[in-house]
Image (cartoon, rainbow, N blue to C red):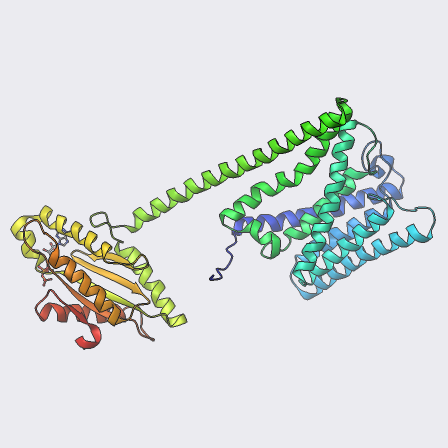
Length: 444
Ligand SMILES: Nc1nc2c(ncn2[C@@H]2O[C@H](COP(=O)(O)OP(=O)(O)OP(=O)(O)O)[C@@H](O)[C@H]2O)c(=O)[nH]1
C-alpha cells in the first residue's frame, strides 16, 4: 500500500494548541489558588469541593508545576523547552516525595487523589509524560503513560458518578477537582503535539478526523454515565441486584446502539457533503458538450504528470487529436450537426481509455489525451484503437475521421515542450493526409 501523508486541518490544529495552552493556564491558576487557600487557611479556597477536605500542598504544587511545564513546552526555543523539562522533573519529584511521605512519615501529611500511593504514582507518571513531550521523545511510551493516566482519571470520574447517584461520600475522597485537573492535564499534554501520535487522527482533515473529534468525548463520558445509572438503579431505586444488572445490560446496549446510530448519521451526512463537493468539482472540471474534462482540468492533470516526471521519472504520453475537415462538416450540415459530432467524439474517446487516463476537450474541435505510465509504443496502440473506433462508427451524415499527434514525456521537459511536440506531430499527421496517428519522434 502507498503511504499517503497525513493532512491536518490547520484550524483544528490551532484549536488543539489553544486548548492545551488554556489547560496549562487553568491548571496552574486553580492549583495556585488552592495552594494559597491552604497556606493562609482560607476554607473557601482550600476546599476542593463543598463538604470535602482541602487540597493540600503536594497535589497543588504538582499541578501548578505541571501547568507551567505544559505552557513552556509549547514555546519554541531551547531554553524554554529545557525549563519545561525541568518543571516536569519537579512534578516527578513531587510524586516521589509524596510516596516517601506515605511510606516513611507514618501519618499522611498530604492529601491524596485516590489514595496516597496512587497520587504519588499519578505525579510520577504525569511528570514523565511532560518530560517526554517536552523532549519530543519516545512517542509510544508517552502515549502509554497518557492512557494510564486517563484510565486513572476516568476511574475517579466514574466513582464521582456513583457518589452523585447515591448521594453519599465519594468513593475516592476529593475526586472532582483533582480528577478534573488530572483529566485536563492529560488532555492538555496530548493536545500539545497535535500533529503526532494519537492526536494526529483527531486533527486530520479526513472522515476519521471528523469522527474522532465528535465521538471521543462522548465515548470518554460513557463510563461515568454507566456508573451513575447503575448506582441509581441499585441504591436510588432499590432494585435487586439481578434486575439492576438486567436494566444495566439494556442501558449499555441502548447507549452503544445510540453511539452507532450517531456514527452512521455522521457518516451519512459527511458522505452526502463529499458527494455534493465532488459533483460541484466535477461540474467545474467538465466540458458540457462532450462530457470530457475541460481545458482547466487538463492543464492541472498535465502539470501533475510533469511534476511526477521531474520528481520520480514517471513517464507518460500525450495525444493531441483534431477532427478532420470539421469546418466543411459545419458548413455542410450546420453548427448543431457539428455539435453532435463533438458529442459522439466525447463518447468514443472516453470508451477507448483506461480509468487512469484523462481525455479532455482542448478547445474547439481539438482534444487531448493523457496516458500515465504509457510509452509512445503503447500510446500508438491506443491511437490505433481510436482511429478504428472512428472508422467503424455509424456516423449520422457522413464519415468523420480524426488525426492524432503523439509524444512521450522526457526528463527535462518544460511546461510547454510536450504539448509542442505532440502538436508538431499532429501537424505532420494532417499534412500526411489526415485520419492517422504520428509519433513526435518520427515527426521530427
Ligand atoms: N459545431 C461546432 N463547431 C466548432 C466548435 N468549436 C470549433 N468548431 C469549428 O471547428 C472548425 C475547425 O476548423 P479548422 O480549424 O479550419 O480545421 P478543419 O476544418 O477541421 O480542418 P483540419 O483541421 O485541417 O482537418 C471551425 O469551423 C470551428 O467553427 C463547436 O463547439 N461546435
